[in-house]
Image (cartoon, rainbow, N blue to C red; front, side, top):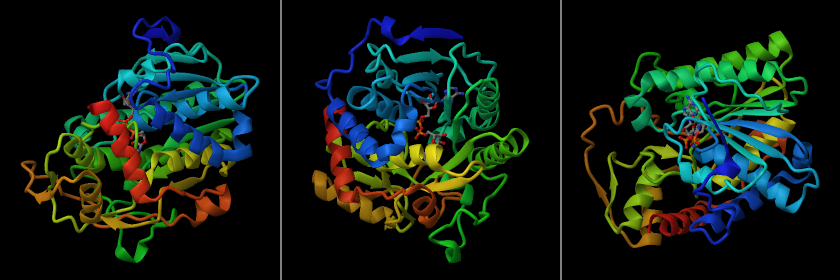
Length: 370
Ligand SMILES: NC(=O)c1ccc[n+]([C@@H]2O[C@H](COP(=O)([O-])OP(=O)(O)OC[C@H]3O[C@@H](n4cnc5c(N)ncnc54)[C@H](O)[C@@H]3O)[C@@H](O)[C@H]2O)c1
């Protein structure tokens, strides 16, 4: 295990708002912090351990803390990031390198990692979320969702002042839902294959939620799980293999927007700043032991999303059968969250329209990819 004090990094770019893409990320952190309102005050002066903090969602969680430090907190919050960079982007944490409130630890959380810094909140955002990547690394994927979570839970159990724990589960735990259960509520038990090509991800997340409930029951743990529904936006790596990065990559290089399906399957895409606020609200206001859908209830077909990106970028949409025979196996046909529990318990209300979110994502992609 290597401890890297972020302030020591030579490649530091600092928190310079003129770094390509940085302005969009900072605006997103500001949107999320504004949506959190007073709830964010609970984080003042606290240390937050974030596994997967070099990834899309984990880094966005850290960005909110740094925004609050710049604008609101007298006693700064501190972010301790643990990441093994299996899918994480070093540049995502190098931007924070000059910040004395950030510590980056390069380590595999599925192993016996020790964290010497006391913390009050823990966020398990480490995971392998892209179907293309998790099918290539099924054991690592299952391990981080089970053993990585277990390690985080044990580290948290050893803390004297633990105030909150957040587990990143997934909307994929619902599998390919029965149409009668769309929009999908948290009490729907799902329709999931335990042996299919997606099982390493879906089933290990399901067991992760079981562990979360067990720690709550056994130890009174202040733990909540979130089930994100297709979060996208600035900061998501462009070669991630998920649909929005694929479209952005094609759009920024003026190539055709290729769909490997008929485009009729639906998703409900949620912009990163809305989702980040929802994740924090779940950690700070959710009922311990409970799971919350976090997403946007606007359901659209993949074809509609491709057409939207095409309209914004001027690149045409085409169809091509994937060379991967399992590309569409167990792929959910529809996905849309019922957000009433998140709204009622947390006050969660996503605001960014799909068009505005895509514009922001495209702006960030153009600035960072070229
Ligand atoms: N983005 C979404 O729409 C979405 C949807 C549902 C669930 N999730 C879940 O949210 C979490 C974050 O997703 P993301 O989109 O930010 O993915 P990401 O790939 O961008 O980030 C995940 C991070 O975890 C790190 N990581 C993976 N295994 C690790 C290990 N063993 N030890 C330490 N670090 C490790 C990766 O290097 C990466 O930095 C994941 O658990 C994912 O399953 C995301």
